[in-house]
Image (cartoon, rainbow, N blue to C red; front, side, top):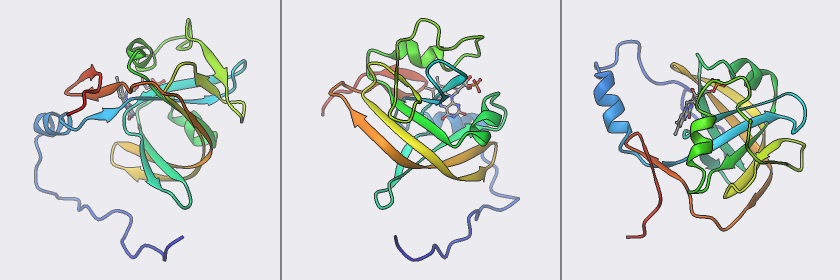
Length: 175
Ligand SMILES: Cc1cc2nc3c(=O)[nH]c(=O)nc-3n(C[C@H](O)[C@H](O)[C@H](O)COP(=O)(O)O)c2cc1C
């Protein structure tokens, strides 16, 4: 671990330059990401999942990842009260799964093949990676909450990734 961070946790001001929300969305939509489904609970008991493209790696030592969840998301309370969660990194044949976990539904898991992770967490079968984590910090991030997770278990398969850019799903092409 390195020395403590000298930066304040939030450096933006109450009166930043005015950024038009539509321009913000259009510009940020140009940034391509992978697509994940983040789940908590157990395979046969209480469980929930959300589609998230805000996932990213943070630190190798210790192994830390982050993602962020909208404050208005119905699942926020559960992610605040459950420390263990799993990230299924979706493969390029799993667009329908991304859409299913992005819509509110009585049972978002209906019709989706799940497997159980090393820590009992529900994982999406056929994903290109499974990363099980323990939330070690939660930060305010405007209209989202940022979750920092320490990786406790991980594995990957040899699938191509699902990519999200410009509000659409894509495959990956080598350049
Ligand atoms: C490709 C894609 C990526 C998304 N990424 C995020 C994200 O990173 N954070 C977030 O809060 N919502 C994200 N969403 C929206 C949530 O998946 C959606 O609001 C979902 O309904 C939240 O689950 P809940 O209603 O069970 O709380 C994304 C949606 C899509 C289609």
